[in-house]
Image (cartoon, rainbow, N blue to C red; front, side):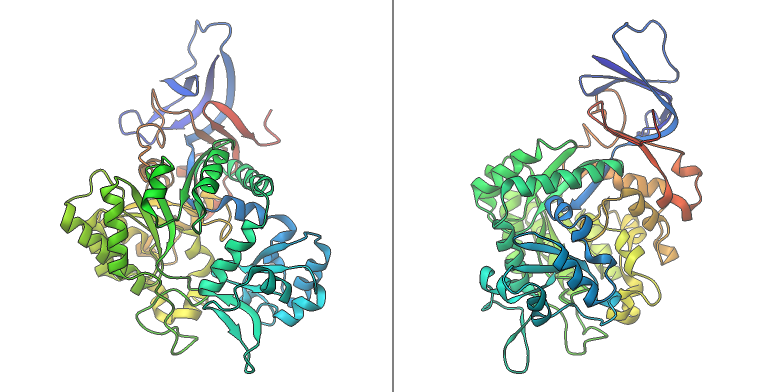
Length: 505
C-alpha cells in the first residue's frame, strides 16, 4: 500500500532537490517527491495531511545506550535529587531485587558527594544497590553490591584511611561492576528497557540510533542483542565495544565501538589530561590504551574492512588516538572505505583538529555536553579552569575537514536531537557555533555516513528510506535560542508513523 504525505514544507538535505511539498511512499521507501498534491491517485493510496509541518530527514543519534537509558528512566533517574536524604528515600521506595539507578551529579547535591556505602547499607542492607554517576564513569554501591559483583580487588575501589571500601567505584572497578550487574538482568528486562528508550527517541524525532554496547559480551549474547535491536520500532545500529575484531566481524556489521575506552570522563576526573585537574591537583586522569595498542586494533579492523570509534575525551587520550590513526593512514593510505572515528573528542588543541582533518576522521560528538556543563561556572570550568574554553570545538573541526556526527550519549543526556542542535548553534564559545544547516547535517546527512548509510538514509529523495520527522515550524525560521523548544508532531520510520503528538489527529 502506498501513502502520500502531503501539505508539508519538506527540507530534503539533498542539494539536487532541496525542497518539496509532498512525498509518495511505497514499501517503506520514497517513490517520489512532489511540489503539490497530485491528482489521479489510486483509490488505495492513504493520504496523510501533515498540516503544513516542517519535514526533515529523520534525526540520527550516533552514540547512545538504549538499555541504560531505559533503566535510568522515571523514578530510577536520580538527577532531580538535591541531597543524599532524597536519594536514600528514593531507594527505599523502589522495589527492584537488584537496584540500578542514578544519573546523579555531585555538584548538584547539597553535600557535593554521592552517598557512601554505609549510608546505602542503612536503607538497603541486603539488596544490592548501584547508583551510577551521570557520566557512567563512576558509581556508588552498597556492601551487598560489592559482595555480589566481586570487584573489590580491581583498580578504582576507593578506600578510607583504614583501607575499607567507601562504596565509590571508578575506572576498571566501575566498568566491571556495571557490566556484571547488567549480566544479572534478564534479556527480557533489558529489551523492555531498550523499547522504553526507543519510544523516547521516536518522540524526539530520532529514527536512527547507534546503540553502543559497552564491555565485551560473548558472541552468543551479542548476536541476541543484535537480533533484538532489529525488533525495535526505529532503525537501530548495534555497536559492540569488543576489541576482538574477528568476533565483531562475525556479527555482520561494518561498524563497531564508540566506547572502546581510551580514557574516562571529565566529571569523574578520569579523562586523560596532559596536565592536572584544576580541582584535584596531581590527578591527570587515566589512559587505558596507548597509541601502540590502538594502532594494532585500528590496523586489524582496517584489514578486516571494519570501521570503529573509540572513546577519547581528554587531550592526552585524543592525542594517542589521532597518532594511531595517523600511523594507519601512513600504512594504508587514505581510508576511503573505512569510517575512522573518535567519539566525544572534547579537550582538544588546534593541532589535534588539524591532524584529525588530515586523517579524515568522523567525530561522533555530543553538543549537549557544552550546553549542560560548558560556559562560565560550569562543571567543565570547575574541573579544568581556562582549558574548558577549548572544549567541543565543533566549528573548528568542521572547517578542518572532519565529519561531524551528532549524538546524546544517553542516558548521560536526553535522547533529544533538537537539544543537541540547539547546543551546537548556541555554543558557549561564539567562534565554535554551527549554523542551523550545519547542525542539521550533523544529525541527518553527515550522521548517516558514519554507518555507510548515506545511500539509504539521511536525506529525502526517491529511493531513500521514508524516515522523517515533522516539526511544527521550520527550524531555519526560529530564533536560535528557541530551537530546543521546537515541537515534534510526528516521526515516521519506513513510511509508518511511529510517533504522533497527542494533539495531532
